[in-house]
Image 1 (cartoon, helix red, strand yellow):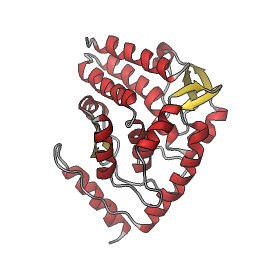
Image 2 (image 1 turned 180 degrees about the vertical axis):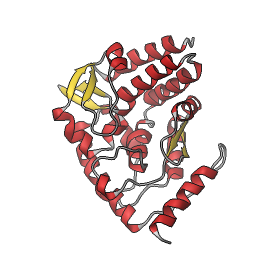
Image 3 (image 1 turned 45 degrees about the horizontal axis):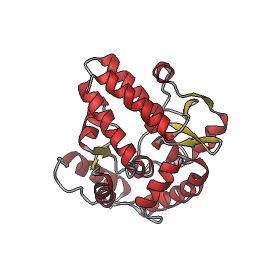
Image 4 (image 1 turned 180 degrees about the horizontal axis):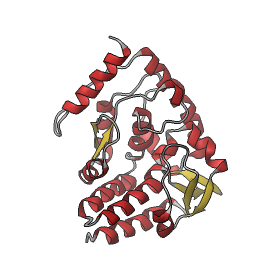
Length: 254
């Protein structure tokens, strides 16, 4: 089967999937397995320096294969046993509520597709490396899994576009490009950083600012390149506490 046919088959299977059905098995080419192996090996070697302690601990509970692209179904079963979360295949980036809403019920929509070779170190679009190395591993941590759920509930309860935009902005600067201070240096909590060699290498040049929700909401998101402005919380507990209080207040959820 040609490479384009394999990708098209993955997208058809993703579109056909319905909640409650088993996650289908996906086929990958030798080139895609090789790309996963190269990127995963490099990322794994960088995480000890750039990943926060919560991520490093979760990575030991959510082991990913080194030499081939993991199956979403296998990772989903691991997550469900650990934190009750599950993965559902998606064809790419989902708009607002379609992505955030299911988080409330413990479902992360994840694309099974692999980034192009030209974007090996940094991909502006989500791919299976981003979904699994970034989001899925962190969902193996109970506190972060609960925070993902809270983001979903907050979006579902938000009563204005302004509130939903603020919630999405906080998600971006915590669960995608979030940083916390550990051992005297910034360490990543965000999936976009943890799944990107380019993002981790760019931290030395980023404009690092103290984590304050008001500043986060006012900051522009730039997902087409390595995020130039990042916010550093004092600790994981500090980030979790501040974000929880913001989400409860913003959504009006009791």
